[in-house]
Amino acid sequence: MKIKKNIAVSETGFVFDPSTGESFTLNGVGTEIIEMLRKGINQAEITSDITSRYDVDSASFERYYYDFISTLKLFQLIEDYE
Amino acid sequence: MSREKITVAVSGLNNIDSPGPGIPVIRGILESKVFEPRIIGLAYENLEPGAYMHELVDKTYKVPYPSEGVDPLMERVRYINSIENINVLIPNFDAELYVFMKSAEMLKSMGIHTFLPTLKQFEERHKSNLPEFGKKYDIKVPLSKPITSITDIEKLDKEFDFPYVVKGKFYDAYIAHNKEQAAMYFHKVSAKWGLPVIIQEFVKGTEVNVVALGDGKGNTVGAVPMRKQYITDKGKAWGGITLDDKSMLELTHKIIGSTQWRGGMELELIRTSKNELYLIEINPRLPAWVYLAVGSGQNLPEALVQLALGHEVKPMTEYDIGKMFIRYSYDMITTIDEFQRFSTREEL
Image 1 (cartoon, each protein chain N blue to C red):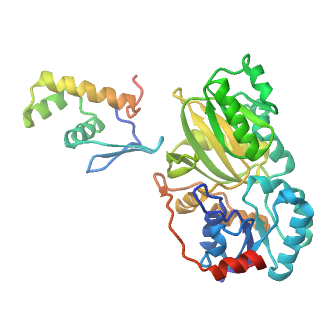
Image 2 (image 1 turned 120 degrees about the vertical axis):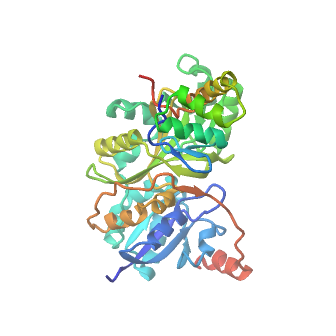
């Protein structure tokens, strides 16, 4: 799963899609996850990283993670699936 | 390098809540690196704000409405030209374009250059001709039909499903969800803009726009795509942002290339959820948001003046993506003396 290449994400969590002109605001964890997705880090590694640094178990995190991914899909911020 | 001194006459000084393009066009021309312009405003009403914006407009003259006939308007332009020696005239209202296009040769004989679409281009892109336009140039357009009577609404059932859009000949568009609404909007739009009223299929999606300039030989001199971020109750952009969208630019090149478009234009498009682009309207002039193009690196008003004067203009292909405009209003203070001078002498 890849974030669309031309999406701009600022340090403050402001996401801008230049092809649609849409912009979104992320919280800190959302920004971290987007950055990891951009680097091509897979879901297992993201889960491991986040659960090691935040007070959340993997099952709960995965639930939030998939919810977050569906939101990214809804707003067309993810490249089409192969 | 010294800049060329020119005098440019511009209409559309109604910089109000539903603004005309005059002031943004003037701002672009004033920022020109090749011209040192004197700006002459042409106003139809005493309270057009541009007439009082002396930092942007050097002198403004009242002109008669085109509906009063070609002759009174041209006589007035001839008088203004005898004082001002106008080099280029840029009309910015849809409703006055026809008169200025028809009078282009007469204006030229006075030494006034214009850079307007041809009558053929102007006619074939009319809202009522959109289906034929789409067919001819292989462009997706919504089904559109001109109607001239309230009774025609009864006959639309076979061709149109609700909701559909009820549009004025020049401006205004309302979404009708039933026959009662359609009839109400028919009266509203026809009272303001006359007949025909255009019925257009409602295409669901996001409205996106392109401001562009064609050189009349099929080349796109410049084009900037934009999405309105917020729309006022009058359907005008409150804010907008430039887009990185190759498909919108390709469609613009296709339209300008195949129609050999001459002059400024605004494409109104709908992008559907299937990522298809539908052309819903071509406005045959630069739009009120043209200053966003200037701010993004394409001074289209300056290029239009250059083309009008027969200068060579290199196509502009670059622009800043993610550049925004936010429209605002402020109360300009003027005096009763200025107002009375303009109202009575028709010059300011």
